[in-house]
Image (cartoon, rainbow, N blue to C red):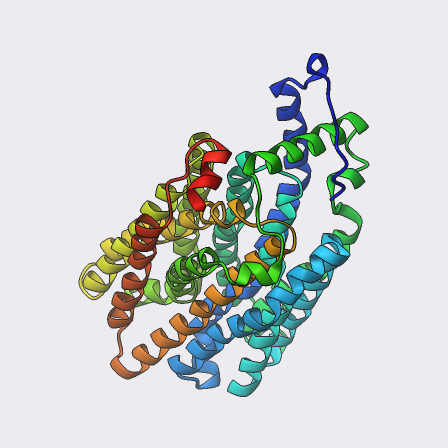
Length: 449
């Protein structure tokens, strides 16, 4: 970002409403489009949870094969996420996001031709390779446009797209699997991969023409609006004080590894719900893919509302510690109840599944307020990607564990106890080791030292 100082005389200092209007303009320009991309990415990532309902029987695969394939996606994330985010900082967001979006779309389409577990593992890994960098890249990208005290709202709206993807993706996958099964000699699950991959490829090309890398390049802002944003971001950087800019130095910072551990515990629950939520619905008696899709849509709609409201409330009170910790605790408690009543109470299981999704997903946007308070520049690009990539190894381990347990015991309950234990650890780590975030940036910075 151009860091040239912009001095506004006191008489010309912008009114708060002026800044509000500029950020509203930026918000409306960027967030809906980024949400659309994240919806496409999320659908292409998690549609495997829905096609599993018939794909495993068609290909004669076990739950263990599915669990490993679902989770191996995150190994691709792990190896390629940090390089992708560093590349974004070097070449810009729109080039990086275009490459990512086209790559994952083509890989999703290729999934329709899967016949063997080995091909399944390879393409899921490749999907992770291509998608690596998108999520943390957007987190970094939004820091170029919004100051710290406006980010939770932007993060929350953007990240709620993953919940909205559940609202859209579940019924869509169920409809495609039900209505197109057998057409052209293809199974319903093959049509899902084809029809849900094509829009991502198209969106990748649209990204090149639509996105702007940084505020100073935004022709859709006036010169005064660009100056106001630049001055406000400089004000925000000064208020936060010194933050680590070096990637290598940030790796030595214990706060980074604390953030990784917290996020690891949250992602263990999030990935379990993502890849085994439809299976839980099927376990309580709903066998139609369309019915499963609509039930999951309702649960994810509640999750989207929770993410947005938690982000808004966090911004209003300039507090992220309790907003993240309490949300994770809700997710953990709900998973525990599911494990206890899965075989005995279908309605309670579905209610707790919804609350587990609400709690777990609501913790994610406000979590990202914590590392952004002490990282900047290259350290932010690499640090955010490092947190996301290492923590997302839980996304590899948790589904694989659940698949192995389901194969060996015939039930998911034991695995859900383990996942619930991981998520409550996130709450305990936050409340025990993350200092309170006071409302002034200077106090926040001082408390992290």
